[in-house]
Length: 330
Image (cartoon, rainbow, N blue to C red; front, top):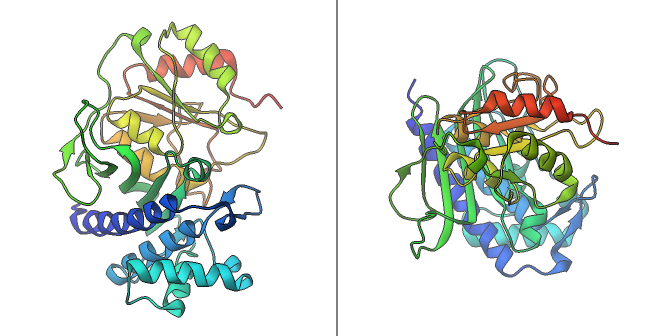
């Protein structure tokens, strides 16, 4: 099947949201931050990004459910926050007034379907990186009958090229099932096909892991590296930029081991990244080697952890993970 229209709409939506997020990040002050129930910080950019993307998706595909990370509870409870988000959104989409903004954010409250198609969205993945002025991603994916078929990662602080060329920051990755993965500068510029690292010498492979130790078992990663004979220092970066980095060969391995007993990964934290890596030639599974199951609702309830590699030594990584143990330390 051809996913050209879905990909074009997703690219347009993420591009517009990236401009909004960059706008907020460049002027961010601590008073703009509020707290989520899980105590991770969130900003008006989360809600503004979701509003812009959902409005564009609903305009193009009105029947498609959207499973977004945010809802309107905070906006309804906080007049000042609602006014800030509305002003920000109207700056980037003048036709969207406050009621339209609220409807757009609410449109992200769809349900994940076992069959049929739906979109899943993380309007800002890597909130702590965003608040530090560092890496974050806008992650949008289309899932059909349990398979990710389109994925777009907007990485506003990631260079579109890694060859040392002087280019503005901002990389936009897109992938459609069976059509490969491409990257282009955000805003303007030609797309180019990317591929995972093809070096078969595992000693030269680089780990990609979270900056935040709470999100990554750095000690276990080091033990796994030792078993595999990996000599390179790990490459630490926030958000689904890790998937983007593996897709274009900046790193060859990304592990997301369970952080606590019973934890289930959210689909919006992985869907776009999975197809971006797979279409670039890589492989993604859980710690037991099973493909990620996107038919279990809003979480990867049927999977434990996530293993991402260039595909050349995926099985060796799985063996090392089993040897060290994937279970959380506490």
